[in-house]
Amino acid sequence: MSGESEVSTEFGVGGVAGWVLGGAIGGALGALAFGLLVWFVDPEVVEVVIPSIYGFDEGGSIGWAIHTAHGAVLGVIFGFIVTRSVVLGALRSPVETDPIAGASLTLRLAGAGFAYGLAVWAILPLLLLPAWAGAVGGEAAEFPGAAVETLAGHAVFGIVLGLVFGTVADLTARQTDDPLEE
Image (cartoon, rainbow, N blue to C red; front, side, top):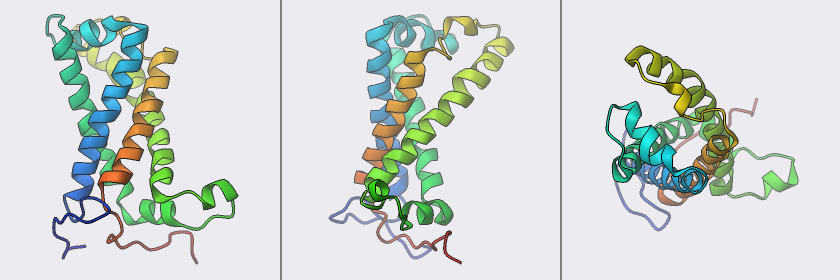
């Protein structure tokens, strides 16, 4: 892995920056998909509540920019996690469950993204946002952290993230050991 360089291959962007770029693009697109889902239910979440968390006045574009930037950062974290040898090895491991055994690495990454989106939902809006709002004197009650639409939105975010990451990042050259093999 230390000899990796940034190259474009027929499978996607490889090398050291491949997972970073794949995570950032996947996270940004996932955040846009999540934002659209929530926006259709309650446009004020993206246009008013998200900017107000940072002390900005309401405005549609600043909320979208913040939400997309959050997604890109979370996408890079996802890319870092899934490219560690133990996780990537588990994603590549053969399994005896027929639906999973026939799934490509990209579909397995979508599943990992789904789980990651649920973990993000459990940690950020449910635990950290109320603590942050309390520390800066904001009102966390305005943000529907435990609402069904944010749960669904984070799940959509993770699925889109995993699919895009699996398409953009070339993981064929990354070396892994099968963590499930004795």
